[in-house]
Image (tube, rainbow, N blue to C red; front, top):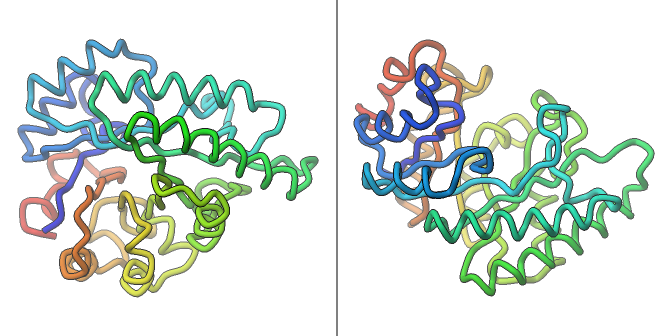
Length: 259
C-alpha cells in the first residue's frame, strides 16, 4: 500500500489542532499534511512532529484572505509582491518543519481580469517560486481543483491545464499535485490518467465522490486505485484529505483494512 498522510485540516477535527498530531500517530499514520501552518508558531508544530515521529509532508503557500473566499493569489497581477512574500514565509516554515514540498494554489480569476494576463502572472509567479524552492532543495506542487462543485472559477481545474503550466515554466522541481477527488469530478479515468502523468506527479490526495468523504462512501474504487499506484511505482505520499461522515476513527476502515 502507499504511504498515507493524514490531512489534519480535515481529519481528527473532534480535537484541538495541536492534539491531532498525536491522534494521527495513534491511528497509524507516519506523515501529516494540512492546509496552512501560519497561524501556529513554527517551534510548536516542530515539537508535535518530533514528539510523535511524524513527517511533515505538505502544506500550501499563503492563499490570500481565505476567510473572505480567496483561494490563492498566484494568478492575480495586483498581488505579486504579496505572493513573493508568501513564498519566503512558506520557505521559513518548510525549513523549520523539514517539509520538502509546498503546494501553490493558483486562485480564482476575477471576471474583470483578462485570462491571458492571469495566465502570464501565474507563469511568472510559479517561475519565481520554483527558483526560490530550488535554492532550498524543495519541490513546488501545483494542484488542479474542480470548478464544478468546490471552487467555481478556480484557474487551474484540470490536470491538462496544470501540465501546460509545468511545461511552460520548465523547472525540474515543479510537480503536479494530483487529487483523485477533484479529478474524478473533472475528468474521471483515474488510473489511466495517473499512469500517463506519473513522471510529473509529486503528491497525491484523495476523497471519495460525491460528498468528499472517506473511501467506500462514493463511486471511486480505491482498492484498485491504490493498487495501481503501487504497481506503477509511485513512491510519494498519499494524503487523506476527506471530510469524515462521522468521527475520524469510524472513517478509517479503509486504512485499517487496506482500503
